[in-house]
Length: 176
Image (cartoon, rainbow, N blue to C red; front, side):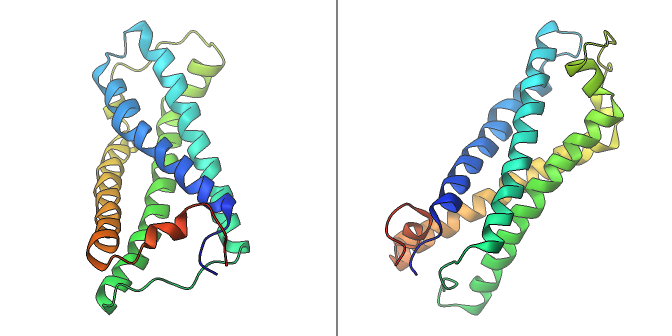
């Protein structure tokens, strides 16, 4: 088998784009807005729905990965790099799910579900940084961006140095 299941491929690319949008656009733009800005509520609504969607899709992806046949593990020709790749992929799953969990922690701590979705009328907290989950959310976002960068560097290494076309495993086409 040369390729991953098409559903896994589709989920990989969909979730990858969603994560990058959340990390590079959603989070930074929300962080710059004052909590008293009326637009913040609209942004938070979208960010929360987006983050919960990423979490749900990651769970589907993990379940699909557990139950579908996969190609044999790829080799970089170096045991240390192969181990690093395994840890990096595991780290991506862990950090994405931790990001969703810390986002839920912020939402629960600040009662955002009632404020944003139920129209409780309560104001947003003056500053989200008072919540430990917000601090964790920022650290996890930084770690996730670093790991994504390493993941892309791994692709560059395979694609241009080893020239093994490893990316084709995570694309659509015949699986055998």
